[in-house]
Image (cartoon, helix red, strand yellow):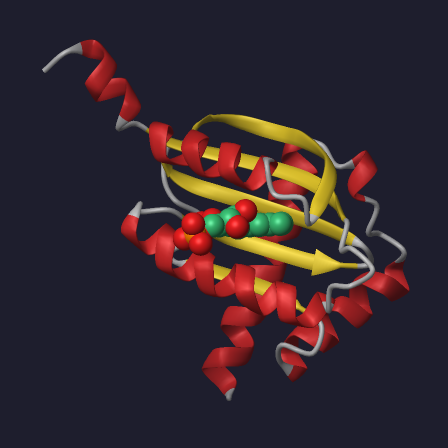
Amino acid sequence: MSHEISSSRTLHRLIYASRQAFAADMNPDDEIDALIRASIRNNRAASITGLLLVHDGWFVQTLEGPAEAVMTTYQRILNDPRHRESRVVSAGPASGREFGDWNMCARRFSAADDAILDTLAQRQAFDPAKLTDRSALRLLKAVRGIQDRTALSA
Ligand SMILES: Cc1cc2nc3c(=O)[nH]c(=O)nc-3n(C[C@H](O)[C@H](O)[C@H](O)COP(=O)(O)O)c2cc1C
């Protein structure tokens, strides 16, 4: 096995933040539904897991999976006109997956998500422009942790 093949199979994690940019003739809820459907289908096929946070005009997403799949997926997302000003907050090899499947957190998606996003808004802690690699992962893991706990107690 060549070095390139083995390194492309190494687990990578990428986190980016971008601004929502829905055209005037788009319905944001419909667009988000459509991109979730595409993500579930494509990410499962590409062994990509992670979390997409949709909040306050921003997207913050982490993608985990084989390096090549992460890069290909991010390139595709980057070309999507439904957002702009994407900034890679962190990218590199990861020792293990923090997200066991692909998920998202968005308003109106579930009551639990609404509660999570209300808390973020109240704390005024949500400023993706200031996210660092550590704080971004901490934020996404916290959201995921709350989602998991709510699912268990439901
Ligand atoms: C913020 C954002 C996040 C996205 N996340 C993903 C993703 O995780 N996986 C994915 O396949 N597509 C994602 N998309 C959608 C892609 O840009 C693209 O529309 C889609 O992959 C095309 O899939 P299709 O060719 O199967 O229709 C995202 C788009 C946006 C705007």
